[in-house]
Image (cartoon, one colour):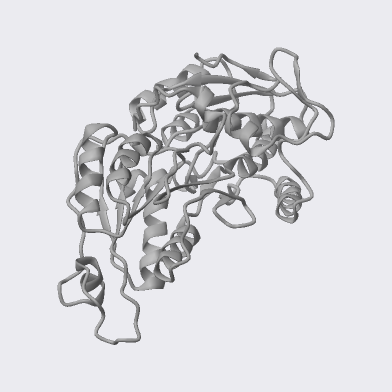
Length: 384
């Protein structure tokens, strides 16, 4: 899903950043509950008949793709379903909305009849920001961005934690020590995730290297497959990808090469050669956020959740990953959950040999979210 990302990396250094989704071409009509149901009543803005009940907020989600992508949008939609079930709210969803004027128009229309609006793609940031300024009584939440207002917050997770674990598994599975990674766009979110993956692999196999190519897509299976093939042709025996489609792991499976997906559990797309991948779990955040609006405690924030909070996790390891590798990963996972291990703690050296962080020094959130360099062991360039 192409997201117009012509943004200043200097600005990104100062704030919470980033995420992903699918390539839209059309708008899907909003979904609503039958008029007779309590959920439909809340969507229409009516007050429940029982005076002791709180008025249910009208909630809307804007997706850059469709839940059927099997990745980014699918996981956001699973989070929406969890929110609906727990809070008794029927949300409006709008699918396949590209960034730019179309997104701003959709946000403006939704702001006329909703109390809370979630925008689930990085490229929605400016359109949402523009609309939020005109509707101070509506709460706007933007996934992976960094611009906030009193009525607009951002949300993101520390996917790099699960990426490190997946990298450890990859480092144990490779035979020739050459791995490949198809990156979506050269933005900090993707860069620091690739770095974490590489550091994880190097922690168990210091001889590995990771070749990176860019697809400049979020959801374009044909383009992503070609990018994957370009790495497979170089002889990598583990292939990872930071996109919403399973095209990369499917291309790897065709060559009988280990594959790693993204966003959601993609093991079903290549069960024999699947290792694992970072996975999102947005439900708890959506429940917490909507509840805070309902009870009057909501405040704008730049949320950056962790594995401990459950917003990000590692998808189950594939059926052909050895038991000893699974045990190794589980041990490190428990260290991350306990807070006794930090992925980005020095020494960290970049691909040019420069020591970025000395022994024991931890990267701050601002430094992580402003990453514009690769760690040692990565082959590839970051376009300027």
